[in-house]
Image (cartoon, rainbow, N blue to C red; front, side):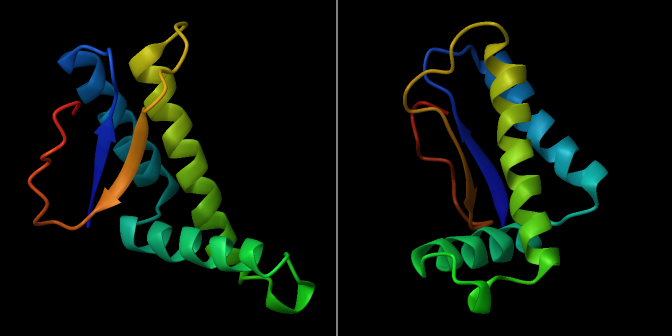
Amino acid sequence: MKLAFTAPTASDLDRERGLAAAYLFLKRSGISIEEVKQGIDARASWVDSGMSPMLEPDPILLTAAEAWDNAMEAAFMTCYGDRSTQWGAALRIVPDNDQGSDPQG
C-alpha cells in the first residue's frame, strides 16, 4: 500500500511536499501504512457501532488511526500553508499498483 494525495489548486511542488510530509510523519511515528489502514478501519467500525465500550479497538489500533489524522494534517498544512484547504483535498491509502490516475494529483 502507498499514499496518494489529491490537492486541487495546489502546485505540483506543493502537492509533492504535502505527500512527503505525510510519509515523514508516519515514518517518524514508526507506524506503517498497513497498520494505519487497520487502525482507521477498526475506528470506523467502532464508530459505526455507536462507539460501544465493548467494541472499542485495541489502543494500538487507535494510535495508528490518530497517526493517520496527524499525517493528513501534516500533508494539508505543508501543501496549503496559510491558505484554506481546498474542497476535494484528500490523502488516501491506495494499492501499490495504483497508477495515480487522478488528474488532480
